[in-house]
Length: 318
Ligand SMILES: NC(=O)c1ccc[n+]([C@@H]2O[C@H](COP(=O)([O-])OP(=O)(O)OC[C@H]3O[C@@H](n4cnc5c(N)ncnc54)[C@H](OP(=O)(O)O)[C@@H]3O)[C@@H](O)[C@H]2O)c1
Image 1 (spheres, rainbow, N blue to C red):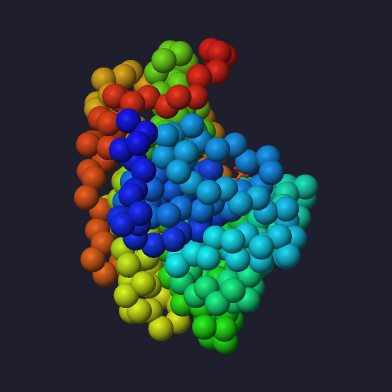
Image 2: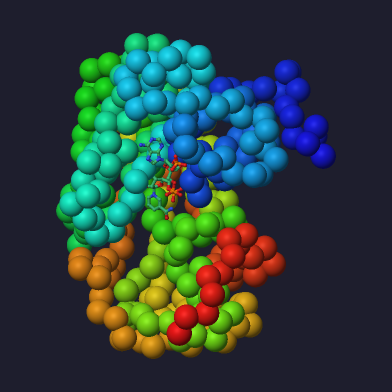
């Protein structure tokens, strides 16, 4: 079974270097690239935990120790055709203790990666942004400090694109969902509420959520990579990876209950909306040529039902 995953030498397409490969999106991307015959290298920290999926047996791991020279060494060893940059620390409402880590993970780490690419003559870069850079549908208005660090990194990337020959695509992701998601996000909490029969305290639920299935998200990265390798990107392009069909949170919960056949009790309005809650997601982004989402929410949720998350639910605490 493992052998069939291993690309033979003459099917190897291109070499990828992926940051954030242990995260939800990065793990799906790494697995897909291995299956598609890419030679996959991943940038990790010493403490990073690799997912257990069999495709990870075929990735080459490079440990970055936080320093510039270590990053140069990783890029020199990997010699990638395309760098997929997904590593990030996300925090919707930061504390003072998180400021250093947000800058380290979301600005410094990426800057070191770009500098290492420049020194190694590697020039195709896919960056990952967020719709949270566009509060109130504005060109730039960060929802939170995390979104501001994403914008700061994009501004740095612009320098490398304008002045150093880096050719880049920034994919701005919206909410994502799909199998093997260990993050404690909406569907995790709904599943837990249903399984434990504990009502879930939520806001009034009128905010619109734009959800894209992980397989569609990964398709956007593949199309972006092809666009870069085909030489279609002179400097830096930005695209929104959005469903274009946001739904109110209340409606999402209704659909989740109907598709999974679970009874989910929600105390609507028991919590206030978050500070700078996004009531209407950014709708002014441009879609990547050749990409559109294919997986309907109902279809994606049916698959989730048949492949529940591996993470054990915490004990019932109403
Ligand atoms: N998922 C979404 O719905 C969504 C929406 C908008 C934007 N995005 C963006 O999409 C990307 C992927 O998101 P995700 O949900 O897959 O993230 P995730 O599950 O939280 O994973 C984050 C990844 O970043 C790595 N990382 C963090 N700080 C690092 C550092 N200083 N050095 C090296 N690696 C570091 C983590 O590695 P360790 O294993 O070492 O911790 C992990 O692999 C991120 O850039 C995120 O901002 C995601």
